[in-house]
Image 1 (cartoon, rainbow, N blue to C red):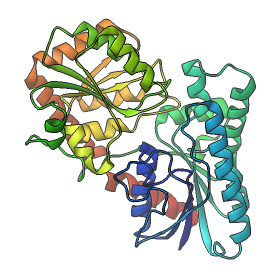
Image 2 (cartoon, rainbow, N blue to C red; image 1 turned 45 degrees about the horizontal axis):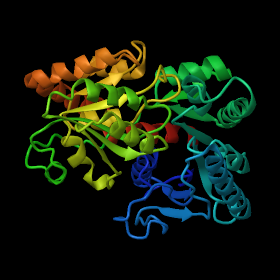
Image 3 (cartoon, helix red, strand yellow; image 1 turned 135 degrees about the vertical axis):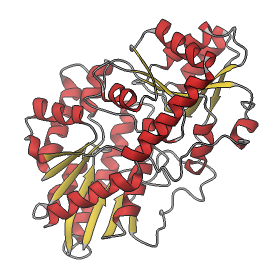
Length: 404
């Protein structure tokens, strides 16, 4: 049975959604004849052999189309990236709709490009599944990037069309489902809630000699780690403020691993403040994920305000799986808070509350047994609720229902 997955970014791109969709594709390909249509990687590593080439798989086909891959440092970069990919994808699918894709039974498109729904219209007579990972308009409003009108409103309109165009929507949280229903008027029975996941066989508690820790001098430190995107949605200035608060504790080290539009500003701020307990590291190969997650004594999920209705950081599942406690800045009604509370795997503090954040870090620093317990609880909860095999099977069941 033939299925097509359209996603702008795909492995070897190392963005979180790219990795998730790559794992989903691998698991779907065990049951279906899968074709992935994607663009050029945006964030790649030198360690990856020729990152501009196709992701090779023995179990499914990858069609990588020409597209721009600008750095996303500006809004213009993002627009050009999205437009170039959607133009390539639209004409490719239009030309091959009744050739290569004649037997397609289901068309899946993701939210990583707000224009992906345009290509889905070519498959109007086939069931269409929309993978809603983010609601960018709501994110922009919450972060103060967009105002209620102008380009922000246009983005909201495009997201509404993407939601309406689908026969079924897979939202990553109940909060997101409720928002889609309340704001966009989509019927609840059209929306399935399927969370993201962690590959619990690849990410697991590791307490031995860690090459990552040894390489960066972290072996004998209490490591407070943030990993991932450093953008407008993440309140990483708050974490730097906590680093300043706790600078007298010489064995506490704050690690910022990743990249983003704010990284250079954060480095300058750390230098200006004279922080010696902060290390900035680039993205590392996803194959090393278990090492750098295990290098943390406590991992951070840190956002400005409440984003639970429009996003849910997928890193939280890997943190739980790694057996390390988590500290999150999140609203008490958020999905992140709900997961941490149910798992008993960490501490949730108010967004923007520097005093609470510093206190939470210090409490775990002083109580290693509490760290261990929270890490163990988180691991158990991840295996029982968010393992890759369990979550991707939910997609299989949803697809079978749509096709039948």
